[in-house]
Image 1: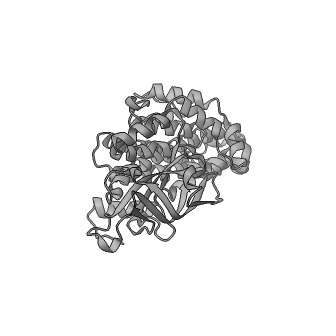
Image 2: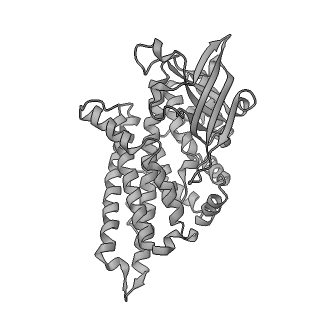
Image 3: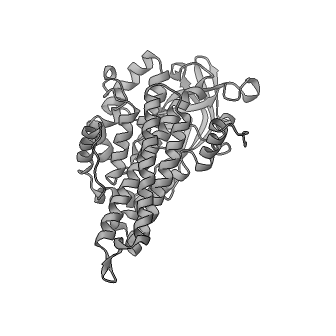
Length: 387
């Protein structure tokens, strides 16, 4: 087992671990096999206040920052769970808290804090644009005090288990704006109401138990008061949510990485072949040690990104680099874990294959490793834009 280091967030770690211990591997394994949603687990996290971590005290939350929220997500994954079932409520806070009006925060935040409402979804990605967000085709046209939404979104997660979604749509055509990042706006969408009046949800079965969907909007009407911030500035606003998302994903990958290291070090210390523990062999030791080193390094970048975000400082580069390093490290730890478990790594009862599938996602989402490298090359190294 990895030596547990004490840090300034140990109280949070201890409390989240205690809650997670009530939902052992068998619970998450059965949820995964059934392709179900861990309602009881998410409800327990909500009741304990962890999903309201970033909501200020004035609105019924814990008043914590992204740093503490990232520790919660890390510990869920390190305990064998999957934060993908609930992390949306954390990173969506960045957009609503920083850019929502006082009236909006008074309306939404107290009910989100108690769990009466879930804000787990963010509608940005579209089939024809992918990460080229400025080219989105979903439109929001203002008419008689309402916005009429038409278009399509894809890979929109937790729609079936959320009450609200933050939606990005074009309010000014791309051809009419000076900068392509202008002319987009963000809205709060009442999902249950939307399903009755213009939004169609099509689930996408996938290799991970990650509830995600394709959405179709056909003259969906949204009240004018559901616009967050100023019309046309939505892309700038949504970046707060995206930076928080990438940093939280980094923390989750770090949690996964520690989980894999814990499991594989225990296994190779006990597994005897040819009269000796296989963990005595350097060919086994070195890949595990290398993955552990990279997890520790990614952890430092995670904290740097969190600290900048919480200080309201630019953190795009740090959020991207943290996500890149952590996703890479967790994937290498996953490969070492499944490799040295041998055939047992593929058996459901060991949970390695489940976590292996879950952590593989983060090489691709919420932003691919190639796009992160392009971002760093352009914005940090000053190289010519490649696309």
